[in-house]
Image (cartoon, rainbow, N blue to C red; front, side):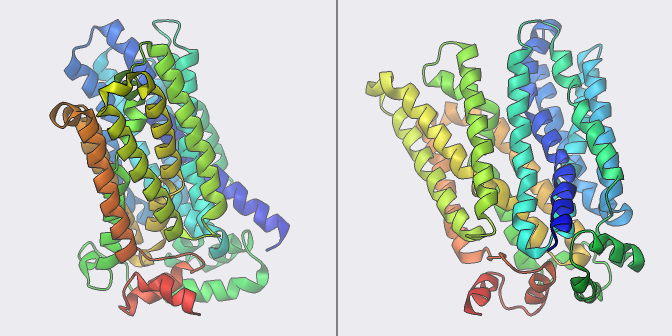
Length: 460
């Protein structure tokens, strides 16, 4: 690939991945803002839960229809409208006069997050050359982690005034405006353009991301994958598509049910369980966890197209299971009270690092790769809805689990789920490294078994 084309590919992926930054910022910023909102409006627990959960409810709604609108209107247009929703939600929440308005605008932000969490990785996967696709799609996950860290830092920096929560929300409009401006300068997905018989525009889009000599081959490959008519929801249940559908939803389950959002949303609470007496110190520790998340996501991007998807899943999920088990052991041994803080912090850091090189980026990458083009929108939308649904369940049950199972039992429960996930990955998840999207679809159509995709590649 020419240097100019490579730079343009990275630039395109980077602009689209700003949707991930917004995703991360708007999910993380509430952790600090809610403290001041609760005090200012004298909120009861149920009202606090409504403010916090509004984004998750909106995300489920947005993810539910993201596939249909993205297939109809195109990836580029949907990302532009999504960025506008982020901006409206951020500004509206910052100017809200009452709790109902905060909930409404946070719900709008949630819809934007749900659509962005599906559309951004899809768009990036469809403009990326196969040899760079893993790293570029994972860039979206990196930006999510960056957004979370930025939100923690903003919360900490603005934690001096009672009314600063408005700025916490409002600052989210800045990256939203940048995303709108950037997307206007980019091309639509070549695959979507070919599907709408806009061949000349598709060739022009491909010319910006690959050598001229490869365009004809890529066009033939895309056109071949489009021979089937646009799929319906019923087609997702066809025997040859079903394995990919199961893998996507199962990875969504394991990404959430192994406890990641108990860490993202409740890290300060967990650290206080372990003996941290100061909210300020607990929040600072949480910032450190967020930074580790970013750094290890960078590591994942470096290795994901070198080692492959499955080796990283094995390494990362094993690390997650071990760290969760160790945290549980620490909470089960009252005699180590003095060391509990350190064990908990190290356990959480190791868990986050392991997640960041495995389930964090690989779920989003995998669902952008394994579905046939004619149903990719619907299938990715379904997997994304499942992800947000599992997210909401896990986030809303963590404190209940600690009451019912105890702190140690809760972390052991997550560790067991993680172990089951490792077995599932071995038995059913394919290795998509180095395969074009069209090759993956062709393999599915031949009913060879999705897991054998990686095995067949290694045999060549």
